[in-house]
Length: 118
Image 1 (spheres, one colour):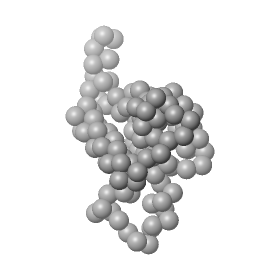
Image 2 (image 1 turned 30 degrees about the horizontal axis):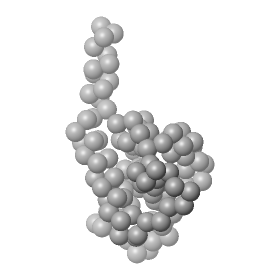
Image 3 (image 1 turned 135 degrees about the vertical axis):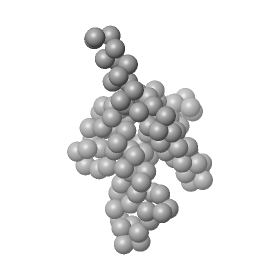
């Protein structure tokens, strides 16, 4: 995610704070965008010829993780995070997002919401 798409993600999600980046609060299009980024980071999908693309793709995931870390640490003016810690949080965030999508398919929400309309 980069350019205009990342700017939209930043405006619509990241600037709203840590709760907004939780998978259950993300609209489908942003969940899909983050999962696309996660797929590019998957070891099975690693292609050395696409290394530049992988380095450019993670802005959404990284932004979401940094928003959570900032909130956990009381919104410091400057954030220092060890690479290992950052990667650990990144992998946890990806895992939570993937599990959320697997466990709670969007169609369940649609079916539930449509019950009241009948």
